[in-house]
Length: 240
Image (cartoon, rainbow, N blue to C red; front, side, top):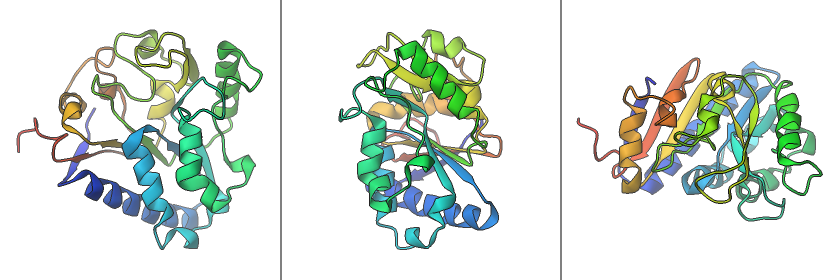
């Protein structure tokens, strides 16, 4: 993966700057296009960016009815669970904007009436209706996982574009849904948001030439740009 590194002194500065950049990008894109598809991530930094965006003064000048919201992965747990990336994103941003339900494309929860396998099929079918994501946010784990594509797990060897069932995640909960590399890499822009010294090895992997099976972050790249936003501690192993 060839990513451009953007490092900020603190986690708070990282969150604020990424939120500002995202709001301004979405403002421009909604002026240019009838439809804009955005793919969200979970994690404390990803959700922090959404919360900061919710407070941005320019947000409500955007034609929000043109934006469709998706997720790169989610836990297959009940819809009311605090572990749901979708629920966290709603609380941080979407509910405050009163986004119509037809614009929110959450991955199925365990109480949606599907088995995990059926949920993956249903989500893949819905994803086929999307435009290429104009912007995809991704967090990165200390093990260099992205979405719910974990090192040396079957999902890293899937080449098709769609949503897969993750049945034995090394990080609890074990059952999840995740977009594949091909689905993520159809995005025009991928922004990786990473903070903390425990992510330093993963940041180094993101900027290196590693096997995506072993370091999944190495397997993602946008068709137009791939940006890696970190705080100083996450970039501590990068030579300047």
